[in-house]
Length: 245
Image (cartoon, rainbow, N blue to C red):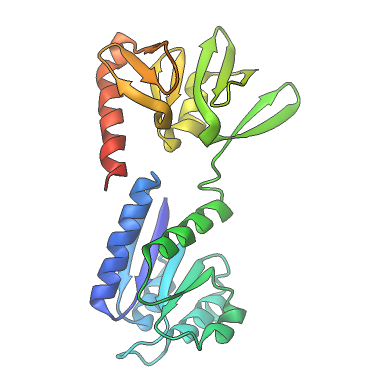
């Protein structure tokens, strides 16, 4: 869960930023909460009362505020001793960039805010805090291995051994529980648990039929177990809908 605060007295811009963040977090399959504030004082009071935020998009100039965003940042870092929250400054002006150095912002975005810049900032935050690593980790004996999620087509369970099938034709195996692997690492990356023996990467699925699933560049479909047919279809359609937002 990423808890976000937007602090900007331009109501329309704040609302647009909120819509953009909802779209980005939804597409990335990351749970979120977003609160919007119109003044720096309001944000500071909320944080002083105990509210916690992971990521703050903070305007620098406020028309109806006695303190600007730079001062809000100093209060957060110094008075509140909060050195964990990531602050992203937003402004129409570039002149403040040097003043922000001591506050250690995650980024400084110039208005009007570009979708790609916001998305990249969110991804950077998620990577820094390990919420969007894009890596699958497994162990073989005393050795630990990491592979890129995007390269995995599917995993197959054969007795106690799990075999990873990669997009380039490679295979790797390790001992483990397919259910645990799915719940702990793969579900958040849009993998489909179609059978007690198969977990499949949505990105390589070309079609979901009644009792089988077809994959890119594969002539052999994988079976969907009877007790998972409705669940798989609903999950598949929900991913399509979310990614088309």
